[in-house]
Image 1 (spheres, rainbow, N blue to C red):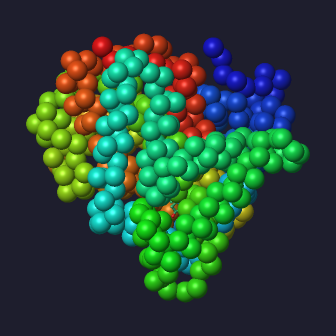
Image 2: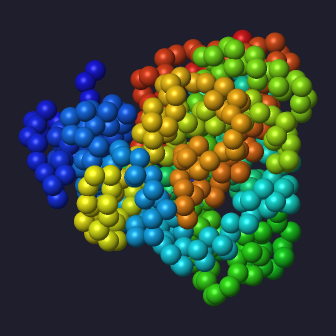
Image 3: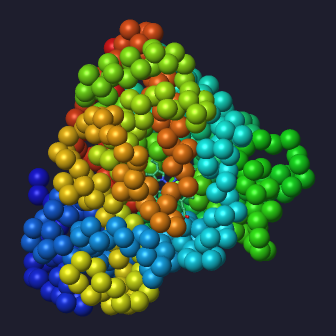
Length: 447
Ligand code: HEM
């Protein structure tokens, strides 16, 4: 099938001397191809236009996309701004630290980052909290014998995220409902009328923010609540400078969002890869049997090199955050080009994660590239989590939950004498933006 590009828009034109990719549709630009076929779109643009070109993100306008490895350095550049992210998703990400720059960003991040480092996670007992939830989920899969993998990993991630936040079990179904409505803001048409997704999504956001305010009050009153919110509130209250509770509330919303779809997609891809590569499954089962139990602390993760390699290789092949936007705050040199101040930029993490410039045989799923390496993990090896001041705060958490998940899956299925098997195709229905994920319909059998 050919790409979802507008056949009537064929002419080549330039903006700031940089070619615009042909094929944009009115209103939605290249979004259909970005969402459904991003790797082919980037390859075609590189082949026909070179390493620098404009893509049209519909309502978010044109972003200058750069495939030169210099683009990765932008993530650390002081003269690029993340404020563009707020302009692209004001209702959902407004006021969160991913949209802030400089000292405002540092202050907000410093207030909460400790809770997400290995020590903070260990002290909060996050591994112990997750283990029974993950175990119960994979046992349910074993009993059902076949699952649509992505809807199920999304449910699992919601349970983990809510337990992380210390949301009481009796409130979970209401949170689920509001959370689904909040997510609609990502794709809601800009029509603010009763019953429309925008109106419902904003109401859900206000409900979630009000609940978070109550959590913060409870945490300060030392009410008997567990979870990361307590740790974040105490760290926040001890941090320098007076930050308003609005910052904390917005960032609790960000944490709910940032870890859910990304981790669910990664776990789903991990199971799909295991189903497609029986030799990887055998290696994982061997490791799980040697370790004998699901690890709960960060210090235990070193005993699970196969599970760790699986986590890293899954993310390399299927990075959940495919594109990162920024705005140039001054004129920049990017590869062979001068980029004017004010340019909206797109850093295609997907392209670099699967580039032959950075990885040998990038299209092959190879655990060996992680198991046989002798040097420590470099920033470029974890570029799927971004880099520089905004590097993902959830990295250690995701590492823990993915290793816990893979060991629990191997132990549970091995005990029952079954293994994962792919029951449907995987190419159709993949998505790459705003979060990349496999098709909702991919089915995995356990037999
Ligand atoms: C596989 C899972 C994940 C992937 C691939 C991922 C990817 C990313 C990327 C690429 C960024 C950088 C965005 C930018 O530079 O503009 C980021 C930022 C962030 N992530 Fe993650 N993420 C994942 C899971 C999580 C989890 C589980 C959490 C927490 C519960 C989390 C919390 C955050 C936060 C708070 C930021 C903003 C950091 C800042 O702006 O300083 N992420 N993530």
